[in-house]
Length: 339
Ligand SMILES: [Zn+2]
Image (cartoon, rainbow, N blue to C red):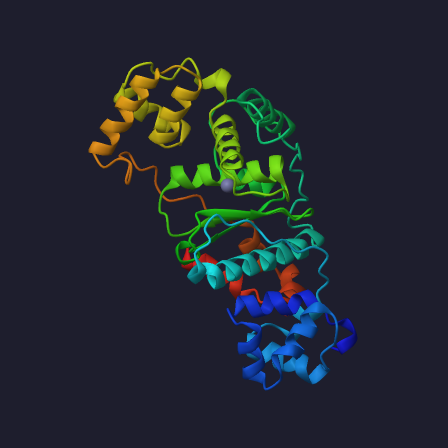
């Protein structure tokens, strides 16, 4: 490629994929850290030869640096643990590549456009009714049938959301999302082998896309809103209210867990939120669950977490040839084998 088509943001993405700092990359290819900084800020352009060195050193196709990039997102991460920063940046960079792949798939008619409703919440003090109403709006906009959501990952993919699974333990985060306009990305942890929790994480990240977009995340209220939305989406009040027990009825709760494919913890919380359970009954249930070790590993596992499929299917399709030439798709296929 020629230096004229160099997209500066791509260099940072490629560098973060390789978990290298500007200085480390500069050392590897024998130029100054200031030069890398200038290439990334757009103050200078690398020569074709330097771009070729980036491609080799960072293990991305040379065409990657010419891929148009219209949006970048910082992403939100709860923890400030310093050791996790490089892992987090790498996870974010992989999410960018997954979005690029979805854009190629969409251009080939193999991935739907996003129709995630954007309904910004009124503020940090939004009440539960408002969140329940917005979750209901999403169910309606997406023509979701009544009853349990069959597969949360499929649901997101059907509506143009890119879902990938990554081992996120070292990044010190359970899940995160990036609100790209064309294809928002939801990243779920591959290290938690719990279907119920993973479904809830998916619905929680959808909440951020619907309610919060690029607004400042990380405050407790915002996380609570996302939890409330997830609970309302997976367990609509008008359907679940009459089913939830008013006492600590484990057989009933087990039955509901199996049917609705959510954790006991989520059901108990829902029973409390909807005021089916008194505060005392709820606390009794939580204590009993703790004493049995159910807060760590719940009984009645629901099987393997749901797996994203659409992008991997696209990579098997001849229509993905250009994407395979332009993008470091091994990053995405590597995810599949790691999951
Ligand atoms: Zn969150």
